[in-house]
Length: 234
Ligand SMILES: [Zn+2]
Image (cartoon, rainbow, N blue to C red):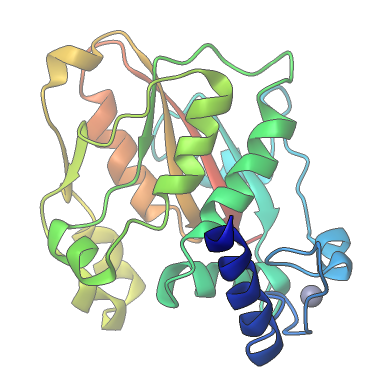
């Protein structure tokens, strides 16, 4: 009893000394708000893409790689809330943002009639070195929420990143596109033969990462790839 009260007091002190700020606009959060203030929550640019209609994310992959369907939760705008959220998630140790977005997205997506029958949910992997350095894969908690709500196995050992491309951010787009070939490999391909896989990532910009991952997956006989991401750059 004392322990519980004590931790509540510590929380209250923390709250006064370090009031949590909104990850979207940096305003001080009030009690009951988590991660985002109410204004930012309402302002989140949700795409409302579904698994039936063709959308702008699908079109990114036309002629590049056969993806069954691609959807994204949010629009990623320059200097917007989503950019700020994903920056915190990726570079500022705010891993729980992934769970927050994943839960929200899963609750709107999984119940839809057109949600496909899936066999595995696979996150876009980081190179092991990079993951050690960051301490986590920013996609994990988001993907796990989708897995949990759709009752689909979460499998992060199927697709692995074989080359570390950290230095590639400085190269030109062309080099990056060329360089993105064969960066990913499927481990134990037999295990995914004939399966429907939902590939999950944070944000789609050029689509090169998803293209590269999807190409590795569809090398396996009768694999169908679906894509869901937190955001995409329109
Ligand atoms: Zn805000």
